[in-house]
Image (cartoon, rainbow, N blue to C red; front, side, top):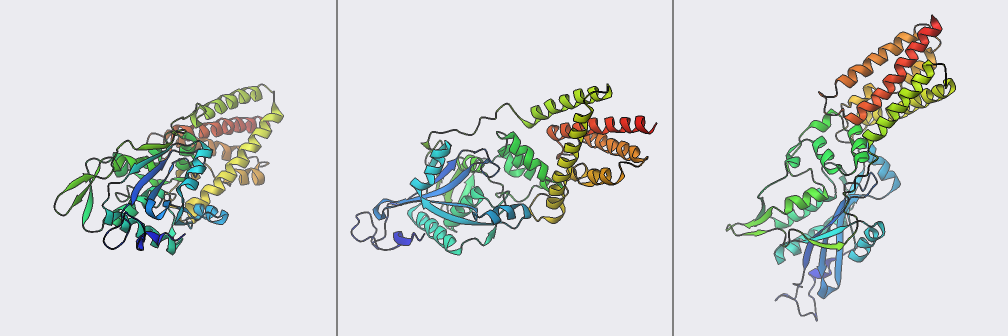
Length: 388
């Protein structure tokens, strides 16, 4: 959608300059509360540009090129991102339907900077999807920041009175922070982020909608003469949609879920040792092995084959991989299979003991490993009884 009408002489309109160009341009940041899916859990943001005299009210945002193939390509690290534009009423309607809060923060830019911002976004639209999308560093928030910073050019700069320590921390700290109200999403991303996730990266790249707002609330525009003005006209913004603000965590967190499963697994194992529920334990063990293999294949792919940022050096591939299922299928009748099971049990125990020392290993994942360890020890004991 071309929006360069505002650059043309606004014939017949009263709000124009001596060149006949519209002067009633307003720019603002729209910050959308987090949703509940993997793709929406960190919120969203857009730049809203209005020119009433030209009848324009548009919202520009950055995201994945919205095709099924590109969404799958996200996990290969090859997904492409692009700017898109929609009439603001259409853009907001989606969030009205979802019941998500949207807050508008008007930007305190000069007329020339507003014009440059609009021109830059028009040019980006024309270029299409040419950037590789990166959920850590090239996302909707970081690209909004890029557009506004670029519009300032050399005559002004942004100065920050304070900045969140999260922006100077590791990628893992960043993901934990922006996922704090979505514990299952945090669990998902911490499963993917390997040792590479403990890198700090470059300053000013790790942005989410909430962190961008927080940063801009403490930012000032300073010109070459030292004149200073706040970037946001109102720090608290204006609520456009009074929906869910995204802070409802819910009680069913991964930690609570896996504690319940662990207790059930212990109870099942005790019953098995008493000679009861044998068929159920076989079915449970098969499901655990199959789940472990499927998850392991996905992790092995993202760790060793994918170029998705932050996923290399994943500790969880030591535990979650297809090898246990393959060994069981091939060697479960072998008399020495019990020793392999005991060896794997010891690996699981060492993995659990590493929890305080490896940032990727958290309580939730530790509980999952404990579940596997309980069943592993039980099977080793049963093999001893059968072979004895």
